[in-house]
Amino acid sequence: MGGAPRLLLLETSGRAGWAAVSEGATLLGERRLDEARRHARDLAPAVAGLLAARGWRPRDLHAVAVGLGPGSYTGLRVGVMSAKALAYAAGCAVLGVESFAAVAEQAPAEAARLDVLADAQQDKVYVQPFVRTPGGWRPAGALAVRPLADWLAGRAADAWATGPVLHKYADRLPGGVPVVDAAAWDPRPESVLRIGAARVAAGERDDVWALEPLYLRPSAAEEQWLGKRG
Image 1 (cartoon, one colour):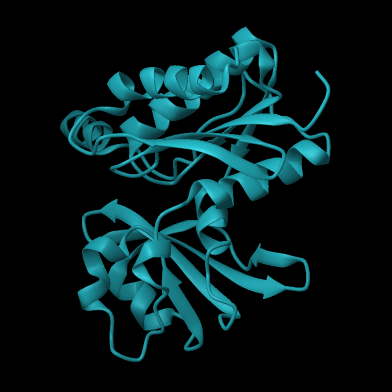
Image 2 (cartoon, one colour; image 1 turned 180 degrees about the horizontal axis):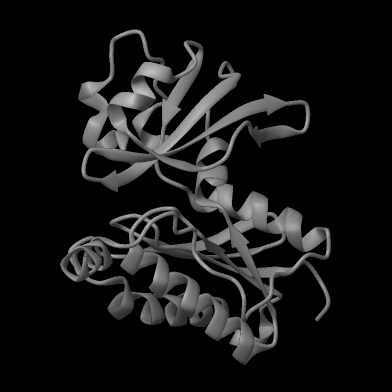
């Protein structure tokens, strides 16, 4: 395939996922998935509609870039498995994009440090610190699951807060915590595109058999099952 790379972008880590298509650095179309319906039911028709609107066939794609979370277990399974299946069938690359890295891309210019957070349930959060460098945002620590209270007590004073969990917990943050605008709490297609396009330009691709969502703990159903067995 010649010309600018054509990408399919998928992000299903949150309650409302989306699919999008791009050519080069240009986002060409986007479809949001209904919050009230399951990603498994909406994702395939959304992808088919996006490709049809451009006159593209799956084999016209150079890569499928998919958000790896952390986030909704069901949504991530649907998104990652769909990306892997489509990439395998189309013979194109599959690229995992860490959803927190995409959210960090959306922070304002005045932020130098950032904590990205998502809901881990049971009053816990997924959290990862980022720091701005001349080359862009870089992780300043590992992704972890922590009680919300522990993160609040130990956070760096100058770190901005962002991420999907703020839809739920923003009112529990002390007044001195700088917070990114609510419109930037969830990963956007433009951010996933920037990361995915850079990986394509570098000639990178992930193993279609080994790529998995970012799971740091069992799902709620698995925890209940393990508790019953224990």
